[in-house]
Length: 210
Image (cartoon, rainbow, N blue to C red):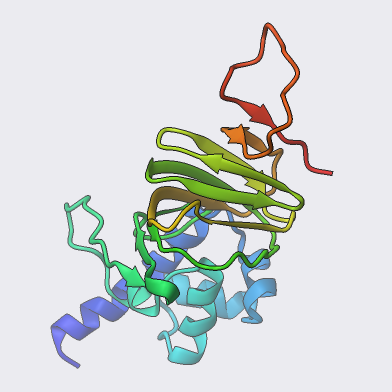
């Protein structure tokens, strides 16, 4: 085995330990998630056991990183994230802005027009409109967000977001694993007049989850 390959393999254990600690995980909780024994995880992190694909694949899945990110560390001393735009269906583009997704993942997205399809999943989402107009559907409620406006919501509620018209919309999109109260800084699309309040911001609407 040449020196370069040996160095790469030796670096996997410390990288696994750093990822686990950064995510606030114990060896016990990681063992329960991956099905890998506690002793094997400990030996992997200490470098006493050689990493194999059948061990690295569930660990990459548990840490929500690409397999190659477990094997190859980023360039030393370079804090820049090397962006890799991903083209999604309907012509949309997603650019991950976090190198190693942890509790909060950050994306820049350009969304093309498409038909609404409501989804639910655990977590919360935070949306900031950069350009264009964003249509946000939360259950039976609907809002239109414009540049500079923000929404955050519990993703356990049926939701969908996309362009409000025939033009693409550009947003910053943050996703985390825990739900929270919905707060929308936007004007609802309904024509019903909002009740007046001296303390309420004119462009802020609070939507409470059930």
